[in-house]
Image 1: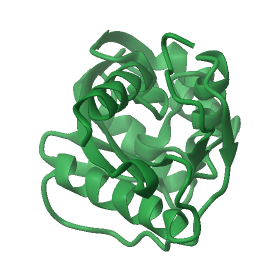
Image 2: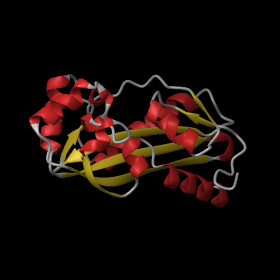
Image 3: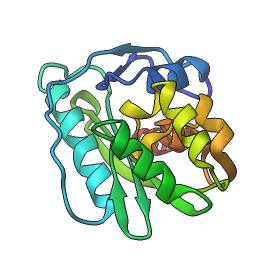
Image 4: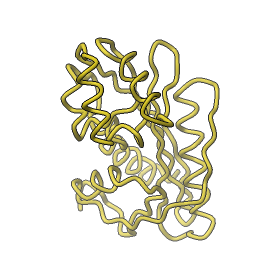
Length: 196
């Protein structure tokens, strides 16, 4: 395939159904092998944090796989310098959504690919800016009642009901969904061509 010139299937070191859907839509052959990484809260720059956890996930799975590329990924939301992870409960989800209402925020996606057989070890962070509409309290409550916000960074999923909250986006849509697939493929192709 010209867009994914790799014979070996990609190993997705993630449980995320959204990343799975993105790879399927892009026609990239893969197997999903979630690692055993316990993520804890970190302070620091969001682009560093997402790359750190993406690497941890890729390293965890690649220890038992050397002949296939292993992809680790992580996503975090940043609002005015504050990091928003996954809400612990409905109250925290309501607080996050209320603070995002009517504002721009950034979604950072971290990617790490480890492929020992080819000597590939690459990582990067992608930033996408998203603006929410002004949300009413009733809209926030109705959205939370769908259950969608509770396992999403920033308490929303742009590919689902959360699409109704978004007014504008600048950057890669798929990064907000969980995987900046176009940049990932091109970075991997460049690494293969350069023998990195």
